[in-house]
Amino acid sequence: MATYRELLAQVRGEIDEISTIEAHERLDAPDGTLFVDVREPDEWDEGHIPGAIYTGRGRLEQRVEGLVPDKSRPLVVYCSAGSRSAFAAKTLEELGYLNVANLAGGFSDWKRNGFEVTIPRALSPDQRTRYSRHLLIPEVGEEGQQRLLDARVLLVGAGGLGSPASLYLAAAGVGTLGIVDADVVDESNLQRQIVHSTDRLGEPKVASAKRTLEALNPDVKVVPFEERLTSENVDRILADGWDVIVDGADNFPTRYLVNDASVWSGIPVVHGSIFRFEGQVTVFHPGVGPCYRCLFPQPPPPELAPSCAEGGVLGVLPGIIGSIQANEALKLILQRGDSLAGRLLLFDALGTTLDEVTVRRNPECPVCGDHPSITDYVDYVEFCNSPVRL
Amino acid sequence: MATVRIPPTLRAEVGGVRELDAHGRTVADVIENLVARFPALEAQLLQHGELADFVNVYVRGEDVRTHDGLDTEVRDGDQLILLPAMAGGC
Image 1 (cartoon, each protein chain N blue to C red):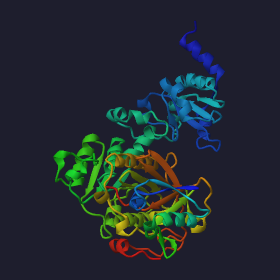
Image 2 (image 1 turned 90 degrees about the horizontal axis):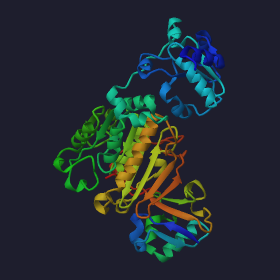
Image 3 (image 1 turned 90 degrees about the vertical axis):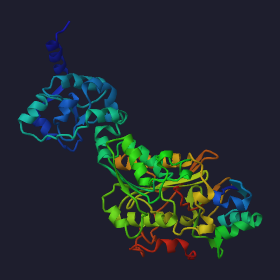
Image 4 (image 1 turned 120 degrees about the vertical axis):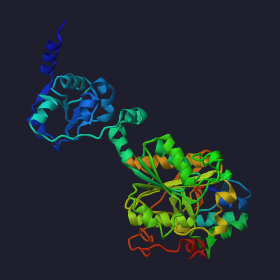
């Protein structure tokens, strides 16, 4: 039976080791060398090698294939002094990683040499618990959760779509949620607007939503804009530096206004709309895909575009479409996955079908096209009520 | 024969159904075939013989305006989607 020292010596004989100086030369090397930190979470929080990924020794086997799917990628494994990481390097080789080196001397020697160190902003113990299901997903993890906490999302409308979207964004820990809505909570809203409740009747929707969302997650700050979005206030509201706009407006003039302002400010819009049993959802990402005017150059005449107040809407439908909007907003913040830019999803709740159509950027688009003819806000109410131009 | 998805705002014109079968080798033929059976659709889809600006028509998932417009070919078994803009987030 080997002692710890004998076992360590044996393992070190079986793996490759590199010195701190050699390891430093491989930082940002063109071969894509990845540093893997296998220390305890509190050691990582006090500082780590720049660009390193973290997976504690205890869950290494379980997590590493999710974090590093390419087994030929060169890896440098380190702990504080090179012992724990020697065993980790051995394990990685046993898992099939082809190019693994142990950092002899570890992070202590790295610091002694005066090499650069990144000190991460750490999640609090409460946050680690609250977001634990996010932290377990390789595509989110601690870095992604920090991104969410730093993110700012503006919701246009705290109604059917804004309710589920804001609830899920708040639960996910999106740090700042702006909400634009001039209405008060009405009894007829409660069949679907789940961010509000019966004891809020008559209360401004932004105040009601703020109470619900901040109670759900104290990490979230809600910035209320108790006003209708107009050409006069849109620049002031957008100047707050939003990463994503979630558009759940209830009328065409606001839709076109949100579009034009977002194109000019370069902010992606997650667009959703609903009527009776049908929903539409897509992403308009300036510089990446088409805009709302590429999809619908003209609004329909008012008699062809009844609102939910006139035509009704199934209560759960905004729950489905608004949740897809929240999903798209989270992916845009995390910069993960494929967004709905260039694709319009059509959901039919009666048949439970989901269709997808392609939306292309129109080079002739008056706002995002190659030679835009609209470069400042127009009278959106007049634009949407005027007879259709041919 | 193609199938045509009817949006909720146009269902009153076609007796309330969500989908119709229609004949035609082009989008124009299919719309003509629909309008012959449901004349009230014409004002909702066409203006001066052209596709109205506020209605999108998709064949095989593509907007016909990015292909040959009303002349876009329709093949047997294709699904056409008529899609007017909806504003509601309510």
